[in-house]
Image (tube, rainbow, N blue to C red; front, side, top):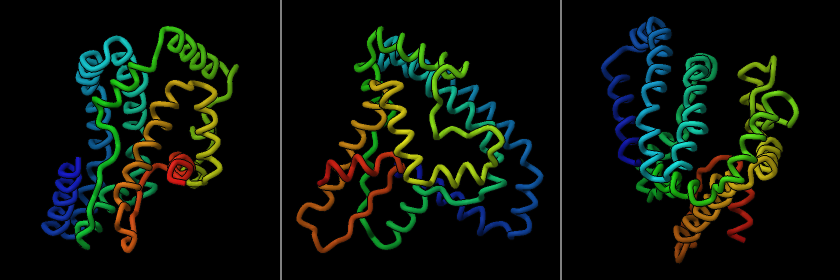
Length: 231
């Protein structure tokens, strides 16, 4: 994972070094539509690979997780990615962290689950009853019978307003609570188990190195859980 991130950093630096800012801006402006189209097509083409990986690693539960939960989120992201790129130009936080860490010689620990591990954990926790409950929850949210995730973009909300709201701790806490109530099994895999994994990685990194500062970069929804486990 780290090598992929470093490869992306090198490619972006080479592109900047080989092109003037004017040419890069012109190229990006001319290719916006092609970029969005290729991103959507890429998301669609990823379906067979995700389905195969999900089935091979987690059986029917892994297949459903890959195709009914993960893939729709990737597809949705492909439609909004170009809007975000144009409206909120910013660096990828993981690329920025790796870049700075490499510059100062800091150790990097990639603590998150790999895709195979995530699918296996999900498959182990999902029973038939849990799938039925999840289906009811999704249907209820789609018709307005049940509350939706507070993290989702609201009707009429601009991208900037949505991004600002997503960066608030209260929003992260609300979406965590919503997940625990709506689908405790998914919340346990995506949030609780990863909280523990991140906390253990932080403690391991700090062990015997009290003179060094440890930086943990995670999604905002994980912060409270990691702090509780470290304490």
